[in-house]
Amino acid sequence: MNHTTTVIAQEDLTAQAAYCAKIRDYWTQEGRTPTAFVDTYGCQQNEADSERIRGMLVSAGYALCDGEEGADLIVINTCAIREHAEQRVFGNVGALTHTKRRHPAQKIFLCGCMMGQPHVVERIRKSYRHVDGVFSTHHLWQFPSLLYTVLTQGKRVFSTQDEAGNIAEGLPVCRTSPLKAWVSIMYGCNNFCSYCIVPYVRGRERSRRPEDILQEVKALIRQGYKDITLLGQNVNSYGKDLELGMDFSDLLAQIASLDGDFWLRFMTSHPKDASRKLFDTMARYPKIAKQFHLPFQSGNNRVLQAMNRHYTVEEYLSLIAYGREKMPDIVFTSDVIVGFPGETEAEFQDTLRLIEKVGYDALFTFIFSPRQGTPAAEMPDPVSKEEKGRWFDALLQVQNRISEEKHRSYIGKDYRVLIDGTDGDLLTARTEGGRLVRLPGSQDLIGQFATAHITGCTTWSLSGHLV
Ligand code: SAH
Ligand code: SF4
Ligand code: F3S
Image 1 (cartoon, rainbow, N blue to C red):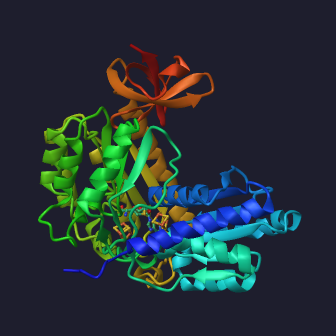
Image 2 (image 1 turned 180 degrees about the vertical axis):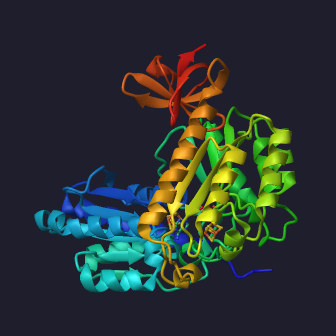
């Protein structure tokens, strides 16, 4: 059992809060309110981290703005999952040389998963001299002191030493939505899927104490949040490091038993750890949304093994079948990688067969991207880019048809939805299964649950009217 997780001491967090006060004083002396722009790439984990960064910035007296131009501070929270994500970040950071030329006092910070890779940090150090500060996800809680150093000493700071990872409780948070909240229940990943960079940049799995999570969720419900998503790279490992005799299903049951009108979601689940107990728990508690994101990655057992996924197609399908037996209306979504090194056309066809068998409402499709330092990046990869592109397009075509068929099956029925915003003249809402619905209605309804009658659909969304 791993007991090495460092929980950041209260006095260290208090010291950071004191830096926020010092930064406020600094700007008071400058005689104005500074502005900050936080730009986020990647997954919900990063979104959740950015909400903490914004929280710290607001504590430090910054007003948040939504563009780089003229901002006193720019923080880019980066993602390393695929090369494309990294290239976008490098492109945008490069372009900031111009923004900074127009506003020389501007400070630029980079953080997030890319900063957990030493070769990226070196490149920033040498070739992106206009970047003032860099910190990895393990150093997020130290942002106020890093910012203070940059502001007052005019030197660059790099806080990226490799660490197993820690837990910082009670950081200030500035949430983007008044309705939907992310709650990280654990950090890091131990799975080392052979293609994936996440375990290298986010460290080992570590769970927050259940009482801290419950306290956060209770506060969210009190504040009127209606859609709460528990986050972790593999939520089914929750609690393994705590030795409290409690697993993820138990945590979910405790939260779903809280008073209040809300939907409870979670992501992501690894199929090797998603238990039948978890499905039983979902079925038992009405507040747990009947939506399950269960990435399968490949429909071929040889490829799954090469990916180090530790389950077979048969085991995966039997989990799906169990879920549907317990909850006939459950919505499944998933992730898949096309063109893993050595994948053959026949193995790719197995992936097509799997998506036909399962029938996902939505599928997130990715072409394999080699990540430096992962085993898959070293594997022979004979299939050409063009060929992989053709497979990818074929997959999309099949999935688009399935999504549309799935969506068509909603037509003529009534669904409970949470109205969450507007799109042009229409309201937007989400079903319990997470499907997007557009419908006419008054903006006063935003934030409320309602019943929608579905009358139409596209590949991506549903349309209808309120009942
Ligand atoms: N922890 C989650 C998701 C992690 S990243 C999980 O295990 O499901 C989200 C998705 O990005 C993965 O599910 C995978 O489909 C995709 N992905 C990860 N690394 C990739 C890579 N090197 N190339 C292409 N897609 C990748
Ligand atoms: Fe990456 Fe696998 Fe961990 Fe998900 S479970 S974050 S895909 S290593
Ligand atoms: Fe998420 Fe990208 Fe990091 S997908 S965990 S932000 S590498």
